[in-house]
Length: 336
Image 1 (cartoon, one colour):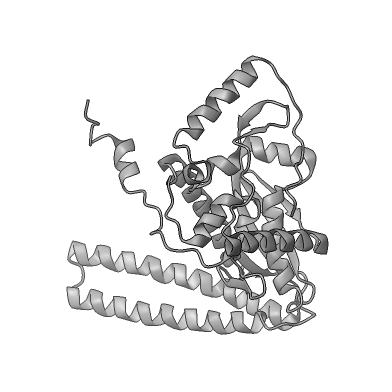
Image 2: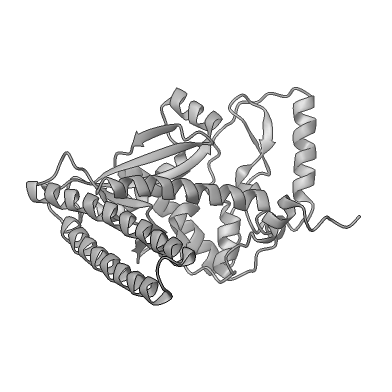
């Protein structure tokens, strides 16, 4: 039976698109805990064999929405300075884009505090001018003003908003200038389920992969910015419950990442695929489950050479759990 084109779910799925595929030139900071075989094939320029599902894309979109909400709140407080800046390491050819760089309003100079206050005013003015645009639009539609008057008002508003953005950019340039008296902070925002949020709260630790990601940014920026801090902020979906973790710089984490990066590039240079992760992993309670590294790999059909690997793995998970084989998870040394 042909799928109903007017299904709202189907219409939503139709507009979900992944980014156009292109050859991967660098290792990403987010690759720290991914399937290294998938990273390997991406660096070789292979086209993905299995794209993300609509459910997976929606989950990633939710993460972007959560990040936008958090950033907007920082902007309203005048402490947001920069986002999505590319941070690149030449030696290991690693690249990443941080979520946010902010200034601590309680640990900065008097002049910085004045600039923060002005940034708060700019945020409110921009919101006001945007509201004025829609007010003018309603007046035009109702016939209170002419099209010429509406267009002139729109032009004036655009000029004012442009001037405000220029001023805010100048304020940010000053606040981003390295100053030991101004404490800047790296913020990485992650969305999670309330179950995941409660688990991290119970153990008092963030996700290891996320910790490695922000550690990379901290490693690259800490020499430039004195007193630089780093925080992982987790936001629970759907109720926006939050938990945050301070991340202290740890060079041993970077040393281990360097070994992994060297291992990946050695595999690429010798055309030798990395160690393939097991399709099955264990939950904290010892139950079998699908390994997230395999499940989220866009190349796992190519990695395994089996288009049915996932259905086979899920069947094995069911068999193991039905047999009641509880095995506590162990860390495996992959040699890097």
